[in-house]
Length: 224
Image (cartoon, rainbow, N blue to C red; front, top):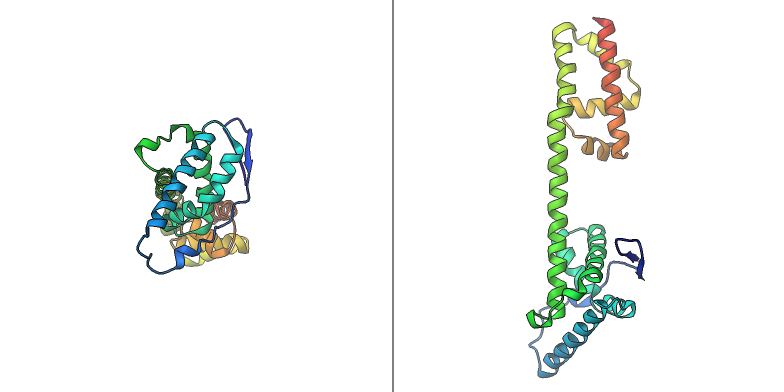
């Protein structure tokens, strides 16, 4: 994985894969022992030092910080997103943010791990909100624009043509256009649902539906 700042300058090259943290699959944690508490305190101090060095643009420190914490960050993100692909992308975004904002970490306000987990959780929640917003935007666009096109065709059919004329109009479409228009208009599916059902890309689905509607309108006009 190549992380870069806003200017495109290389930060550090790391291979980002879905980390496998065996501890996530184990049973309930055992009661903390004095040695475990001491180890965690030592780790916290070490990670805080790594963050401080990251704030000074130390790439080696960043690489070590990533290696030591990526599994935990990925685990937090995955629990929010429930999708390993999105989780990998979001984990990359988290570490890019770490590189940019490491200098703002204040050990007096909390541990390094706590700071990282907070960044990870916030970034994952932002991703969920962004995906929801995109879906709502697409739905709004569909209701405002696409349904108008379908309604216009429907009105023409109801006002001037009988069923046979409609069938003739559909027959004038290509097979792919007819299939896409039927799924969208008669099946009530959105662009995204048509693309998923047919196993094609979203731009292709949009092109087929719009092309089919245009051709159907022309055919109905000729039959009027």
